[in-house]
Amino acid sequence: MKLIFATNNDNKVKEFRSLLGDRFEIITLKEAGIDIDIPEPHDTLEANAREKSTTIHRMTGLSCFGEDTGLEIDALHGAPGVLSARYAGETKLAADNIAKVLQEMEGKTNRSAQFRTVISLILNGEEYQFEGVSRGHITTTVHGDKGFGYDPIFVPEGETRAFAEMDLAEKNQYSHRARAFRQFVDFLQSAKV
Image (cartoon, rainbow, N blue to C red; front, side, top):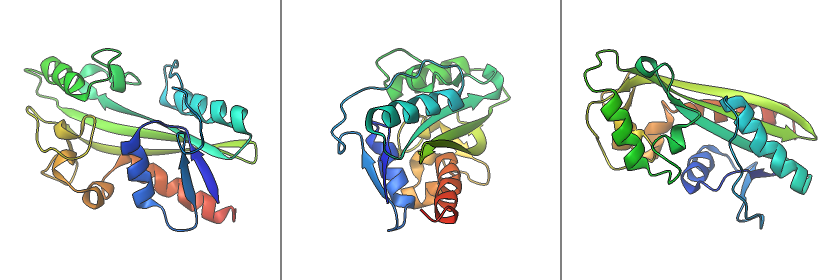
């Protein structure tokens, strides 16, 4: 089965493909010949994920899925949340976003945070949503050079290393995206599609 992944983020595609068996094939927007940047205008991850999947479904009529992920920091009242990718501005530079978070977290003792991913799947015209959460904490400095986004400053519960210090297989043991994706794959397998 082929599913269009409504994203232009190659790092996310790589993570999803690393979790997928041979039964399903993920097609990127680029591979599907779709050259658009889908807006994320909503104030929840659920609505932004739905925006992505419904946009591509309207364009193609094919089964597809969209995903939105946010870093939610307790001491910042859930920020950056839905603004995670553009927290420091529309340029979406990870280094700038990280610098802004570290600056805002200076002097804060509560460094608890979570990554949360919501997947919106449209299958045969029906929408299904799946959520994955990874609790952890924000470091005081950058660690590692793997991964992407906020990975250099997030340490998941049960680990002493930041996501950016782990290879993909290690990260997937704790990853919010992997947890949501496992539910997604289990659903597809149980739906016998």
